Amino acid sequence: MAMAPATILTLAILLAAVFASVLAVMLWQEAKKRQPHEPPTYGIEEASEFVLERLDPETRSRLGKAGVRRVLEWEVFYLQGLAQPNRHNPVVTVAGGHEASVEYIVEQISTRHGVTYSSEDVMEVLEREAEYLVSIGAVGDPVEGEL
Image (cartoon, rainbow, N blue to C red):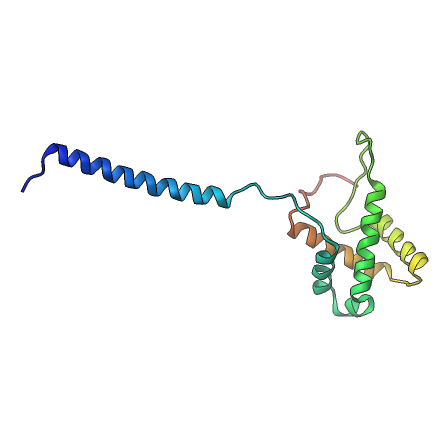
């Protein structure tokens, strides 16, 4: 039994409409997944947990959760002090810490909290914090040249 040309055309149009509908639904679902995401958000609690889990066990036992949090808070305070309203002379900031930030943090914690942490322990916390920053997408590509 042969189909009439009008029937074949109607069937083809119907199949094309079904295919287009399925494609539209798939595209709509994919578009929902790719909604613009919020910018990375740094959280002291989240960063502290991340860092604490990755510290050398000896460093972790010396600092504890409170010490890690204290280091991170003073590091944020240090970086906020570097913020400039005039970006014509930007300050270089390094994820993972550098000598000046470590000295500042050690000094502030000693002066304000009466606790002494070694520069090595503070540097390890800052290195793990850099890993946290990378994990949340807050660190850009490395910069060429000297700092």
